[in-house]
Length: 270
Image (cartoon, rainbow, N blue to C red):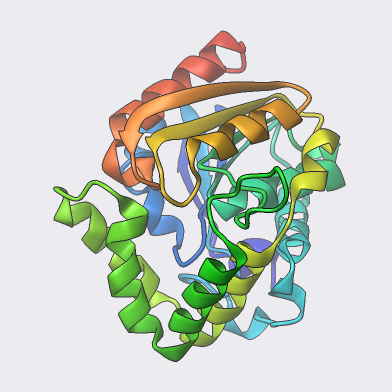
């Protein structure tokens, strides 16, 4: 089976345009981009995918040992980029996939022209002087609740993660995405996400990077976005008006506008 089939890859827009590869975060699938893809397809060759264990990906490829690390997902992404043979693609990673794309860029810098990180966090747990937003105990409580009853956890946490308390439609989209994931996969992916420490990879990233930080985000607070941008060798930090952890759902217009402005100023549009 090709990696494109394994990751349920879909193409949008013109194959001759600048390639954007959109990589979703924990508990989600490529449907999380459905508000932004139509806004990008006129100017870009947009590639969407489902990480193994999510959406329409090949369930038989799921391996809890391989995907207990972010590097396992990054290796899949590198293999996909080699297979697709895209011309100077831009990788756009949301949430934990911001770090997955960072690992992929370091593994194969020749395959990636730029990175865009939306709501990134290299480490969710506070440690010494580093502020990740959560104590170790809070993360363990979160993981225990997820393990005990994933569907209940998903419906409880979706409004917290999405923010925008007056926007039930945003909470609903995120909750539905969470509930589509197999609980066994979700438990492993959650531990991979919330217990990982990708801080060491940031200084090794060689691609220019846009860091998109929501103005209020309980999952990846502003201090985390600022930390990520400060540790990357070549980064631009943009703080969005959007709130919550999923601006592609809560404010797709601003998300696309900032992305397009950044890529236009970098002269990568064709």
